[in-house]
Image 1 (cartoon, rainbow, N blue to C red):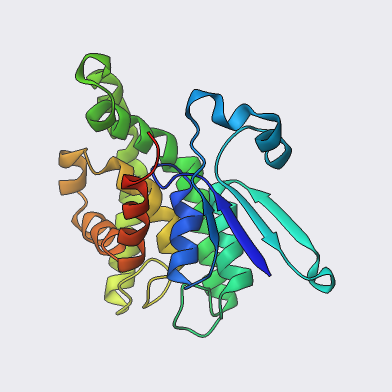
Image 2 (spheres, rainbow, N blue to C red):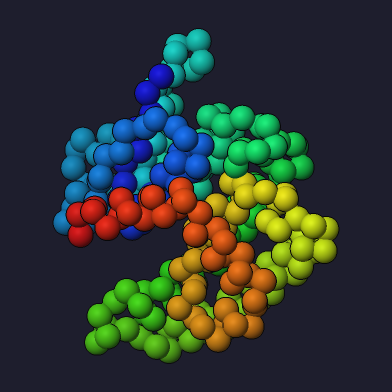
Length: 224
């Protein structure tokens, strides 16, 4: 078996890279940037006709389905947890049907309810050059994020009361990985984060994990 992940860590590719690192997998990392038309070459479009990173290529034995080619970062992370992890109640892999359902629910929720606005906050509060930022866009995104963050804060409160400090279980799972990878983008919205202290504490606990720090170190050495 051979596993390859295309994409730079300073992108949505952080999700499968983080998942693979949490699982302790051996994989080949192709430091594929998205700038300068790099994902529009015929070779890359043969992997992902959308011309986007990440891409995951899992070369499995024929009796296990042969080569699996996958794009969409959340799908890649969930796939790795489900098909390369052990449902042992220790790893990020869901150990029960209920945990698996939570991972699916919260991952889709993060994409539909929070990702676009969280990315807007990141870009217009931090990433773009000051003259390119539109503070009013960031402010509008923060107002919209207040509702989904309220939902998440309530879930974390219920989990805390049940003695489970993470989103879907007592331990860190792929559900946390997928959602934290989105909401981490919203951290520059300081007032919004201050209004949701359980959420901020949870985000920080997730992104300070050794596996995530190792992946971010890849990002510092990635092409601009």
